[in-house]
Length: 370
Image 1 (cartoon, rainbow, N blue to C red):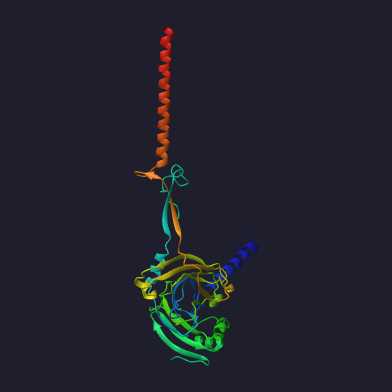
Image 2: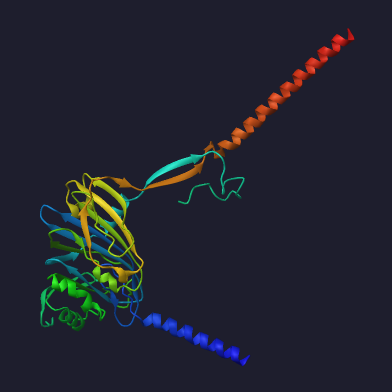
């Protein structure tokens, strides 16, 4: 008995230590970089949604990014590499609502004749039969292009010729990022990219970062469209990416870069952009492509998303089919009326046959009596 009690106590202590470790361990979760909370708290990015506007005529790329986060962190930071000098501003939160509405599946209603599971008489009648359908110090080899406050964001735009110096500058200036970041930044330093470092903090102290954060809009020149993803290798949890691409033609990621195969969920032309979509893409005709991708093992990410033009501007929309039992009037199943009608017809025929038989027997009896 004493041995059993001892083992139970050991198990409880082990579980407590495991839970305590999960509370203080940092969570790296950001599709565009490494998002790290401050003060030993926790943060995770449940979903990253980004819109890329590529203008091939001017060689201008604009990325609007929004993160949906969870945890108890009041501050967090991330860094995004960009191929050329970038301008940073707040984005319009309504943009993603508008783009999301455009990608809604087409609804088609299908009917079926015979009852299925969930329909009467195979249910209790509780259902309707519908189908479920992230004073300035300057470190060596680091240049500060600009630093500004944008809503809840402290944004620093940087150049660097040494990834270690860049990591040191970020650390000294309050951008708490993982120790492994310097190694992951080396390919970008070698390519002479620049950096947008973002520190997030709510405008009211004591409020954790939670839910959908305000979007950021990053604009830069480029030879071809790219969506930076390499720093996602630092993530400790699986990542989900929603990528909206607006350009003159249908655009798609060139390869999977270590995740599941990207899936196109919508493709189609917007003839007259309006509202926040027009603010991003202009009011001329633009082709809109929506892509989803899942990264179950972020450590396998081996590059950035290079966006290329598809062979054809083929439109695509998902279809949501809702199946309902055929009914008439106040919801009376057609099959029931059909069966009842058939039974009545059979009954009428049977009654008629019986009556005919009786008449024949009666006539036969009369003849016999005669």
